[in-house]
Image (cartoon, helix red, strand yellow):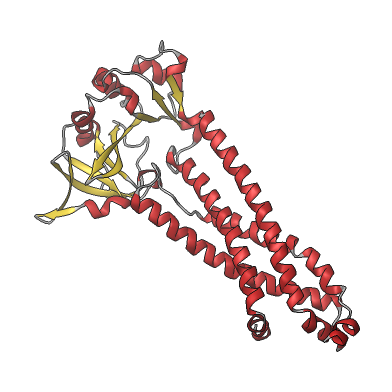
Amino acid sequence: MRNILKSFKNHKRATIFLTLGLWIGTSLLTFTLSYINSLESKSKISGVKDKDYSTFKWANNAKLAYLEKNILVLSRDSYIDLRTSIYIDENRCDIHGIGFYDEKIYTPNTSGKFFSKDPINEDTNVAIIGKNLSNKIYKENNKSFITINNTPYEVIGVSKESYYLNSILLPMKSFFNITKNDPIMDFSWMVISPSLSLSTIKSTLGISNSPKELFIDLKNNDVYDLNTVFLMFTSIITLLVASINIVNFISIWIEERKKEIAIRKAVGGTNLLIRRMIFTEIVVLNLIALSLSFLTITIINSVINKLMILDFYMILSFKTIIISALASILLSIITALPSYKKATNIQPSIILKEE
């Protein structure tokens, strides 16, 4: 390690440029993967199997009150989550109406309390909030409250679900009091039920005869698929551009070290030893670039979430970190191959004679 640090110190400019190239490439890839992963989490709750939930929108101008009775009937056999957007202190967030009778169907990961089946079906001013809205809480009489439309709601818990990080959850009847006059098209629906198919859900809600073009299945959304394909295509282009830059930076890095490599070969250094030296130093630089890129994306995601720039919460998952790390290391090894050949072709007699 001491020799590696000494080598970096003797070739500061080339080392800085190479680290910069690795950092930019890794950061772009990590952000793209983080965006895709966050977009997936927007319409899915962790711990729920794909076959056990449906999520959709219905493009209808009728008021939500039109479906109130049907929604309450549906909640007897399922966990219903209706979502729309509101503003709290001029900041947009999601508000969810939660309805269920059977607590065993699904209970989100929450610190504090979650709704029991009694207040969930009553007009009760209690709420559960996402972590990102903790700064909206105020205290009165040793209780926590959040204000919605000038009405205080007691905060009984904080959801740990990424799906709810920028959200306020209300019992369904309390939710109706706020939103029943809003058009149905403004709401996203999620229904969790191992026993109910999407067609049964539509039948219970009384929307089976609705034209197909007015019903949007968010679980199988072509727009989302196109976005994902586009982002993956962007990731590939980013990797190609980053690869070209890294090849150039490594080439400069090797060029500046011709004399050092020539001396090593002159005193008995083999091509294998030279390759190992280059490989080790590139891996070390790559790990430094990875650390910087993860820190960068964490800061960027934090700013995006704090300013609520997107309508979903940006997350940097362990899966994204692993994929980015493996891709970055593989990229640096592959792009270094031309430099390995260049370094092993260095002739000490010619280089040292020029010096």
